[in-house]
Length: 274
Image (cartoon, rainbow, N blue to C red; front, side):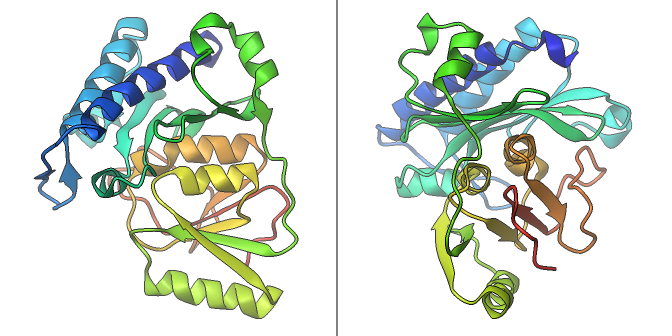
């Protein structure tokens, strides 16, 4: 199945969805509140529609879960072998703040684990992508995408990871810093000495770990499966790990409850502090 997925076309779809988001971003948009009080904008809806239309037309046999889509009962999805897991606009709070740190996330899940991930940051115009067996990559600038094939894409993209940090770098959420995360950072400092801390919004934190800009991303505040799936694919295909904080097991998807456990994401070669 995964061999038939056209990675370049998934990337192009994420860029089109990003363009729809930017149209709203540059306007005087309204903000709604969902049942869980998280923000929702027209950009979320337009991105969702763009991605779902493409996936439905081209991969009608693969079901879809999207943050902005209808709830799929567990009895319906529990035996899915493959499905798409989408966050049409990850980091809506960052979108509302207009700080540019939001992304389009598209992942393909196989038997509970991500095997393909695409993350596009429209304001930054940076694409991170990964496919099982292919590796993880970063491409700065989307303007030439329409004129190239997949081989040229891979030749022009930067293979991840490529950075070794002299000082241990911990990255955390810009909008969701918990006491447990602060305690974890203090424990890392006690073990490694000097520790650099940075913050970022959305799934960019996972991308920065895959890239090597950060060594580890501890997350003890709530996230949903669509928040992390694409980023987990990118980290894992770069050689890194995304593990449950309590069990050190690989973070799994398509659970009955789509809420993620607390997790630790680490780059290739970083010894996780447990």
